[in-house]
Length: 115
Length: 114
Image: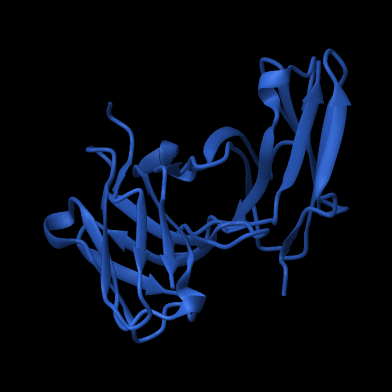
């Protein structure tokens, strides 16, 4: 399967713990995005990478959140000292450069539950 | 502020009939619009898109119409099938921006009854 993959699919953690999610984009895509979706809402933009450079972070991304994309391939999203309000679906998407860059292809998401 | 609005949380349609999902936007800088479909426990799947230089784009049973002056777009599904039952998200972006981020509406749950 050559789509976007995310791991783990589900994560249950206790408040105050750290969690890390991984996203593997479509291999030829140089742009990678993280979004967060809560119940009854559409996905909300968190951050964007072009190759290994993190070019924008939403104000939704507090200091407890950090994202990396070493070598411009896979990306990780870490949440430190999790809070119950962090419970959400975390979605990763990727897109290519050029004419096809408008469409973003999403992974299945990681559902985080903070107890 | 909600820059992309889907005012109908849900829509129920009979199989074989037309489904019309609506979306309004407020940001005049948006110039590219996309529709995504989402099943439970899966990520959004791209359906169809339209650039602001067009007013219609068609792909099989799916047609998107754009009315720039009204800042309104709609997705038509004809004929509707039970497998179309899902949440549909409207999304928009500013192609002149530097980050390519998409701004989504809250979604409309479409139920197609057999």
